Length: 618
Ligand SMILES: Nc1ncnc2c1ncn2[C@@H]1O[C@H](COP(=O)(O)OP(=O)(O)OP(=O)(O)O)[C@@H](O)[C@H]1O
Ligand SMILES: [Mg+2]
Image (cartoon, rainbow, N blue to C red; front, side):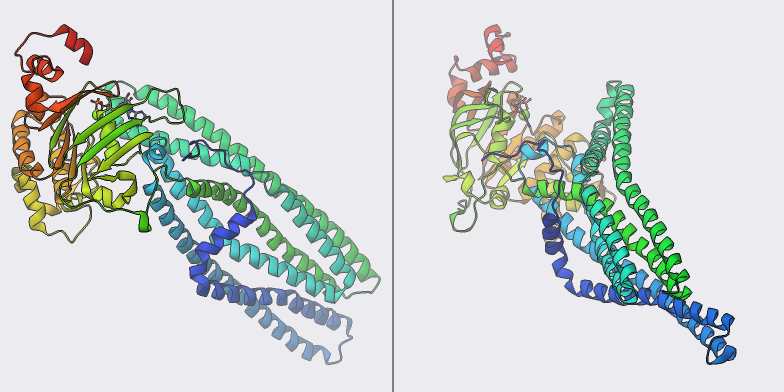
């Protein structure tokens, strides 16, 4: 299965059809709220259309009084004027109230819809394989899941209210004007169409610049996140000044991209405004002519002018929304790209899915070759021709120099990746045929880097599953040798753990991760250097705990220190992506020529450094 490279090009023209599809999918559950919104909009627009009519009546009545041409006389006209003023006030107030209500409801609809989208995106990203994730920093993912969607949410929230409402108002105004005077109607219709045509032509002008702007934002987030995560290393290596320098550089590019995007968007806005001023000149000029010729009253001329002013707001709002549409267009493109990103792991479900047998799982690698960078066929494989069997319930110790591929082997067992060639079988079943949740429930993994969450000890142990009884959690802590540590906690299981495990030592964090795995009761346990961060006393405690915990389960234990694998059933040694030795531990230990026996003699100080062996293994 081929996947898009991480730097897939982003479409510059996000088509309206895609907005439509997204809008439809995420707004459908809120049809009720949308209907209320529509009613609010329609009533509001009706009221707005009424205002100039009231003004015309007012002006014509007032000029009539001045000219003394009214039938009812000045006193009656005065009462009528007061009445009209009252109507004007009521209508104006009503318009404002309805507009406010529509904005509030529109925002609620928009946020509800985009929160659904955020959830879907997060779920989607969590299901993607590690190739996808290792190509991106966390900061970039935050920007893509939240930043892009927030841009979309502004769009969802306001687009309906502003653009649809604006369009309706526009049409309403033009209809009224047509009824009033066909020439005026025609002139303003042509003007409006022209303006909209110009806007449509300019719609995508700013999308490329805006896409670059958002990408630059993602880079800034990614940069800051990475430096903060590695703050200790940055400080320890005196990299502070360099990091700051890089930061300033990143910010400078960001600033340039923001400015360019803003200017591109301004072109759209300024064109709209210029055109509008032109339309105003023409309309006022022709109105003056018509009044002078006696074709329309002064009130009508004022009404036309008023309608023209009113045209400005929907056209401006539509233009403004075009900017949002452009930002949303860039975001829709990126969201869409993210949603189309497919995991490289073949997923099986339904009738083809197979279950893993209960109890300990047999592990079988058959001719497995794997490469992290499978896009580069010339790159050296990170695993090559691996054939390996660990019978159910047996424990395998995996040795080999750093970078030889030990961790990679466990990653394939946990299906962070799938092999390029050959197959990995668990309990006789090809791992690719087992649904991922089932596989990950039956395989426990403790890695070199333990991830703890900003939550209580309880949640960190149970992974936020509150159905696990406290006794089991405490039992597991005692079993891995954290009993004394637990007894010292001020609030027991409710004691908070800082994110990243800052309040635990590395060894404690590793033991906690171990307890976490055994609570899940897996059939296969993968331990990646379980004791590398422990002091000798804790390590012995861990040894004893492991012996108890691994009983009746299959295990693959990676170790640099030979003491860690003194009690395993079999030993495998890796070198340069290959398995160079594999056999029962007792047999290998007894064979003085085996690499394991030679390594052991050196490591345990039973022999002087074996130059040839060190050459081969180190
Ligand atoms: N996520 C990754 N992307 C690309 N290459 C990787 C990745 N992880 C590891 N590698 C490469 O694969 C090779 C094997 O790495 P692996 O982590 O399996 O070694 P290891 O035997 O576990 O080493 P160590 O004893 O230091 O943990 C190394 O050359 C490493 O550079
Ligand atoms: Mg490793």
